[in-house]
Image (cartoon, rainbow, N blue to C red; front, side):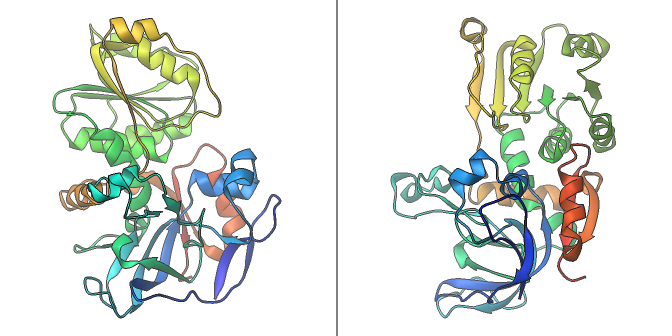
Length: 342
């Protein structure tokens, strides 16, 4: 089968032939229809410091996907051939304290699909049945392919109650855009999205942001005045990993404000901890999705009319992966989809 592979420990990716994956008694084999390009895939393609530490070559990339089940192991009972599925890309041990307590997203022994084991940028992918999410309602394949990052957005956005709250989102990448859509759908009063890319800010406006603010030209305080906010934001969703963005967010929160942090900084940086303490601000780190409460929430949001189509800005045949990755790396697009049926 064809697969997009990190063949060598150097920058680049290769579309090549690899064996079709075998499945065990508890696994399923999935024919891949669409995949989404993630920032993780860009890191591996570039072979940066993180990728050199995290990845062993050769490796089939990819963890955002949708496909159809074509075979199941003999012990699989809840997934059947023909099911349209996406997959939870964090494979957990099942035996640690958190896994046994039902907090699988906190497993310390997590293995990432497309990072620690062969992934979904291929014609077929194998996955434990316990990691498969069956789409019980009709979902556009392009949207179903990005349920993994959509889960990051939902997990982050729903960390705190949103009804009637004023929400600040720093970073208008694909996950920030999806979080803005979720916040609006969940009943936030104002949703402000900041970035320095006008193209991405325009996408934020399409997705329903109250205000899309270019912080290279205007300050968050300017945005507050435009919206008539007197005491700052109630909820912050930090999606960029940019030190200046978090500092600006902290400076514009109301007393008792709550911040969920998804963006990953490249290095340590200082913040004003005295301000955090005296303003009684709550900080919560978010990684991945809750298994499978977030997946349930995602399906309900889509069934309830949440529209993510503005987030998808490019669609390519898997054979045109170079152009697709170039667009995804440009910092101006939304989500980029690879079509494995083309």
